[in-house]
Amino acid sequence: MHITFQWHDFCEEFFKHKNMDNSEMHEKWPEIREKIIKLHPEMTQEELVLEIGREEELFLKLQKKLGKTNKEIRNWLSLMG
Image 1 (cartoon, rainbow, N blue to C red):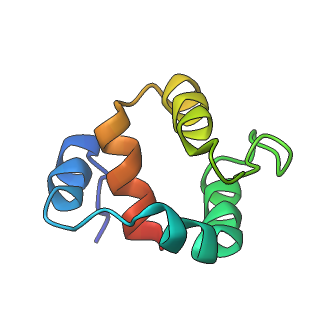
Image 2: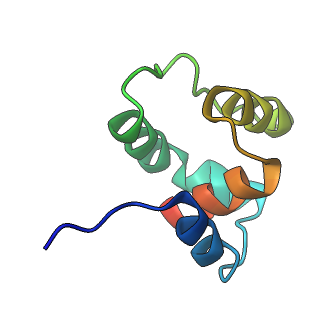
């Protein structure tokens, strides 16, 4: 059986989960970054540096690169962590 990925369905699942706070994001970031790179091999580790106090910059970069909203990005990262 082949399952077709639907972004809308994926986002709906996101909204059921609580977003991680920044400290939790930093703690889990190495694992999350590796998952992002596996899903989006065009992205590099250098692009995915998460710095304390500059989280929003990374979220904006991901929004632009992936064409998603801030809420979608935050939920996606929460699910990956």
